[in-house]
Length: 108
Image 1 (cartoon, helix red, strand yellow):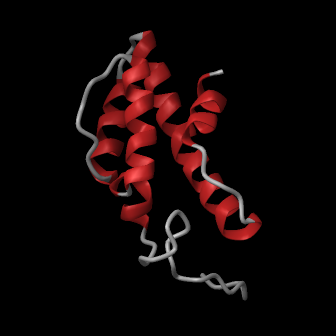
Image 2: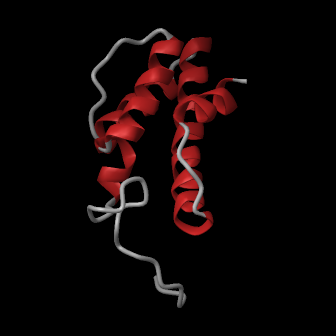
């Protein structure tokens, strides 16, 4: 879908590689670290994989009736939204990426 907005193909967080969905969501060292910090906060020590693996894991948690799993799936959804928001802020507003600030916004 094209609506006439010209956006550089360079990756927003670094500017030197091409942006792709899979890279943006958890292959990138920045977004992988953000999700890793949040997983540790939730009590999960795990290796962060790509989008498909993380989405499948979060969906499995969402189907559980345990409270922590509901919270985990919510945090996953918020993290995805925040990554997209930060990508747009960096790209369009020339904002700086601050993973600790994003973590604070998510958990508070």
